[in-house]
Image (cartoon, rainbow, N blue to C red; front, side, top):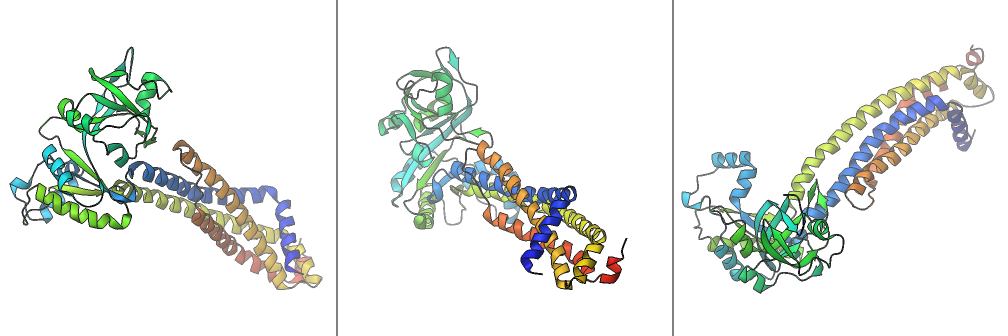
Length: 424
């Protein structure tokens, strides 16, 4: 009997037992769908996070007030206090002032794009005539480099210029969500109109293109004005601090730029050689890295779910194949009586087991990719296919089919043909 004849016979046998085959295929498909689906969703989220949070790309970084990090990560701050020497009191709790930020921008000679910014709060209300937004609008102050360093693009109007920044006059750029709420879908309509931000009048000089949202956080629910204006109206407290964004032309220049920026800013902050940095240097993709590390737990969960499901499927498949051996004892005897060898019988049962397992893999991969890309559609990212995990799923299912079919196949191949023909 040729191999192709054996495979064809295996397919006919599988088709003749639709219910039993369907249940086993469904169990295997469930495990593979969980594995591939979660990985597809993770890759879609990774793509979205990279686009959203790495606003400056891989060739950008920022200088920030160190205390901001300690507020967000008190545990890390405590460990640092225990494990390191105490820094001088003069080195603590010093926000980045306007003068320091501007001095750094002037002193930093590395070929790069430098932008200064200040956060103005996230609970502003913007209104125009009888329309107003929810009290969730984020106010940011920057300079003429702000929108480029933060991944925004102009839809209509103009950007902030040096005169806007120096004078701190009441002009602003509207995020897409704010512009749509107040003026509708026409991006040209808001330009030169007067809106009120917390009852302060601002002239709209431009509208930003849609940037999207991440984890429910909309990047378009924002107002951007100059940092001098934010400093005047929104963030003039003792802890008000500037951030400095820096973008170099090529990734290979990033480390050199970070080193020079650290040295320059230490000088601006008047730190001695014995004092540690009282500011942070963050790569633009550092937040993405942190999120992706947390997403790895989802991958581990998918592996555990897939493993448990496939173990159950393997046991079920082995039992089904053992039942098939019992039901087809006479058939095995007939094959041997007409000259079939042990190898032919063994291969037939192995092929059946592997084919059932691969059918489960095919359905599982298809369902997993569809489920994973439903997340991709919600996040407005491209269609994702995790090819490495697709191939891994096929390999795993092939092994499951092989291992589950070995014992039944050898049991069938060793049947005595005379006793098999007499079996009732």
